[in-house]
Image (cartoon, one colour):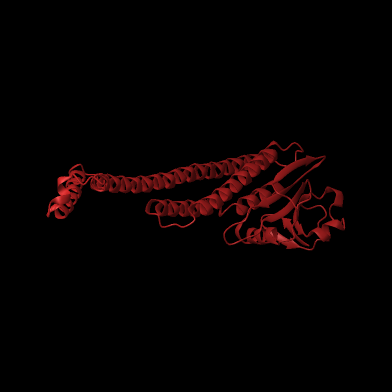
Length: 300
């Protein structure tokens, strides 16, 4: 258990000296179940949480945060929070919340400290790198688009399906954070001051912009998929064009072969000593004529 006193800066203090002062504390689930700070029945189930949410319960507000996987982090981050008049409690087994609070102790000061200011800055720090992450996703998608144009990406559909699932997960994540921002802004329990509710409104607006960015990525991925399909259609059309040209060139030759393959001994070419050479020259002339016509018509 790690506790911080909320003042002009976060100050780490002993968890036994939290009376009559605003605080923010981080504990793991086992410590929370001991009921030292909060009754175990009020702990939101977060270990198997699949989404982020905020709930108003009596005189306190609680919820869960579920952060999706990233490229460098293959597991979801899950933790719970409980906000009361006297302070904020974060229940986290991953030490992610503690790492953010330790950053806040070094980077943030407040003229008018309060639990709302601290929780707002905590949430802002939680999404600080998200815009850069969306830019990386956009760059990945741009590379996939180039690969689709030049046909250099193998298993394109599997890559695209994985990408669209990742973006859809982020879209749901930001939608859930937006709902949390709205609940914090409404402040049914009266836990926050007016200026703190204004901060949560700004947080909700920022989350909404991130959600719009993910929606743009979803639309962009659809366009890239269409580009890839168009390239497949173009390649298929080229193959059909080649097959059509080859078929057209050899169709007259098939006619000649069928004609002279008939067992009609009365045909004058059968008795002519130059008949075999004549058929060869006729076939070559037909092929050259067809090729010249296709070249003239710019079929290739």
